[in-house]
Every structure is written in structure tokens, then in C-alpha cells.
Length: 406
Image (cartoon, rainbow, N blue to C red; front, side, top):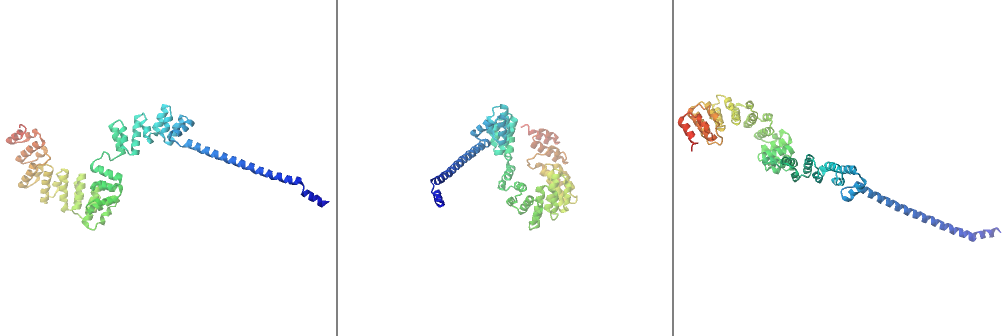
């Protein structure tokens, strides 16, 4: 009995049917799960794509489609804020309120020439035109200004070399472009270039070795560059150039001894400063020439007067050169020898110089004949009839006046 029951149970149709139903139930659950996952995936994909489009629509500006997005989500104050924030003048076009639109153009004008040209206030438009010209390095933009003064000011700020000429222009261009060949080997240009840019390779453009080292000393801010020259005269010449080129008289003392380099060095500063005593820094062998250089260059005879009485040749040459160069024959009066005075008068009065003799320089001529000749030449060269009236000799005075009666 028990055995049959077990067999019947194992072979029971109802048992077999329940097992098949469970199997289909499991498949249905899996299918439902799969459909749900597909739906979720599609939903996530759609949300992600929708978010990206929104981000692009709200944060990227610069064309009409994007500006439409801005205008759809912004009022005019918002548009103004967005234009300023993004430095985008095209957004200003969407503003209909004239006051707000002008404010928008003014605030974006430094970044947009189009916006700048729409600014009504000329003072503000002038400023932004200059800013745009500088930013674009274009002097043509400056031509949009109303006056020559404003245009020239804009051009000068855009290109500081534009109005310069000659060596000054070459120097400016060389420094601006960092190209020393623009100096065309001009000494002053090369010196300024090396000093401003600290590029001492330009110094090789100079022809003399002492000048090359002096240039390097200036470019490197190191006066000891002169010591690298292998001979003493070269070093002295270098120090003289450094002193003069940098306007530092104390460098003259670095010259090895009292020689022509030291003389010329101190003479330069004596002339520049109007200080004859600077010549006293050199020995007597070179001091008199320093005095003479001072007198001739400054049109001040005190340098010749300061030469020692017993240095007769130096004193004579000084007065002679002074009278010739400065068209002052009165200085010849200081010469002791009559022959030297006549020679000095003749050379200073009768020489065919481009500069006329000032009539007051004839007053101190002691010799009457040479004084009258001085006035006659002065009248002719100054083209001044009235100077003839100072001539004492009657025939010479008439001859002077006759030149204007022809």
C-alpha cells in the first residue's frame, strides 16, 4: 500500500502541471524586469540630452540663435548684465530701452569697436576708440576721432614711434621690436638700445673696441667691463665714454692718469655744468687745454683768462681760437704782442664765416681801424644799415651806407 501511494504521487498529473506553471511564471518575471530596465535607460538618456541642450542654450553666447535663448529667459537688465559679464556687445542689440542700450554699449566698448562707435558721448567714444586702436595695434582706428589733436594723441599711444624722425625714430623702433639692426650702426641708438633692453650683443655694431666695451658696461650696469680691454689707453678711452654717455663725472677719476682722456672727460662736464673748476682735476700739462675747450665751447672768455700768465703759448692760442669761433674780435685785445693782435683781428673779423659778428663784440676792439672794419662787416652780415652809424671813419661810414643805396 505505501509503495503504490508513493508511485501514484510521483506519477500524479497534477504535480506535473504545477511544475510547468511555475516555469512560465519565472519567465514572465524576467521579461517584466527587462522591460522596466529598457524604459529606465531611455528615460535617463532623454534627461541627459535635455540637460546638455539647456546648458548650451544658457551659457554660450555670440550668435543670433543663442541670443534668442538669452532674450527668452532675460529681461533687459538681465541682458545688460549678461553682455557685460561675457564682454559680448551683440547682446546689447537685444535691448530696446535706449538708456540701457547706451550703458551696454559703453561698458562693452573697450572690447568691441562696433559697440564703441555706437557710443553717443564723444568723450567716452574717444576713450574707447583709443583703447581699441591700442588693443588692435591699428592707427587707422584713430582716424575715426573728430579732431587732429585727438587723432594724434590716439596714434601716439598706439604707436609711440610714429611721429618720431631720424635717429630718434630708429631708436624707438629698435627698442620696440627688440631688433638693434634698426639702429643702422648709429652710436647713440645702439647705446640707448643696449641700456633699455640689456641686450649687449648690439655693442658689436660699434667700430672701436673701447666703445664696444663702454657700451657693454652700460648695458650690464657694470663699469668694470672697461678693465677687460688689454691695453691702458683702451681702458681710459672706455671709462671716458662711459662717463660721458651716462652723464657721471665721477667716472672720469677712474681713468688711469692725467692724460688726454681725463682732460676731455672733465672738460665735457665743465662745459655741461658751466663749472670751470672741474678742469682743476687734471695736471697742468692738460689743464690749460681744458680751460681753452671750456672757453670756446661756452662762449665765455674766463677760461682763457684762467690760463697761467707764463703759459704764454697756451694763452695766446686760447684767445685766438675763442675770437675766431665765437666771432668776438674783442678777445684779441688780451694778446700782448701787436703782431699777434693784428693777426687775431684779421682772422676773427675778415674770415668768411656763416655767423655774423654781433655789433656789441666790436665795442671792445681797441684799434680804431679794426673797430670800424668790425662794424662794417657786422652791418653787412647782419643786413642792418644802422650799424654803419657806429663807424668813426667818415669815408668808411659812407662806403658802408652806400651798400644800401644801390
